[in-house]
Length: 230
Image (tube, rainbow, N blue to C red; front, side, top):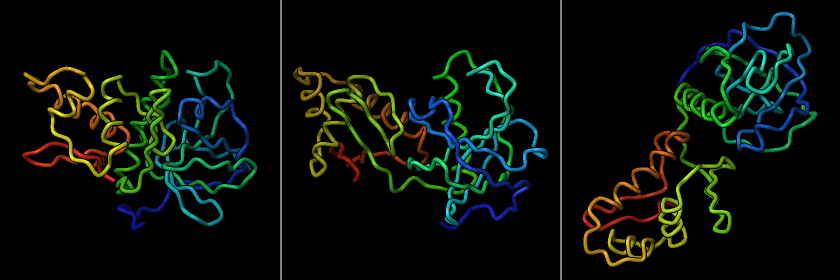
């Protein structure tokens, strides 16, 4: 990938990935917790844009340095990184972390979901910094659990939003009119659907773009309707 920014890191360190509490993985935002070999010159607490090297291969992410006030009340300093578009088991492996720009200070959130919503926003900042466009995403839909995941990160949709996306997802070569979508999902005759379908499509796109800028899975066919974008 050609990086948008060619700045040099202001800080660099190496460490071994150790087991954390697993909260991030449970909520679809896994982090690599590092045991830092030389922690006496850590940057000030905060959330930073980072570049990560694993076996000399570069990745990009967001790194948290400092206490974890939302999760616990102890004084332990955490050094953990969420790697963008990455979900492999790397416990025990060595990472090199480079820091480039501070996104925000450490903040205490009222609950874990609010914290992870903020981390997703931090990831958008990092994506923009590196010029990453989400053009090769894996979408997974679980019809039993009504669950949507992109690159193993859950996207929260309402029941109707899920059903509309699943209709398109399960028929990738079919172009659906608004009338066809309405009758298939709402199970009513589409006498006056006004902006129901347009608003539903808009909300689906907005929720996806909150995590993956400049990308959605729905293609508008002008003058006709919608289809799934492969």
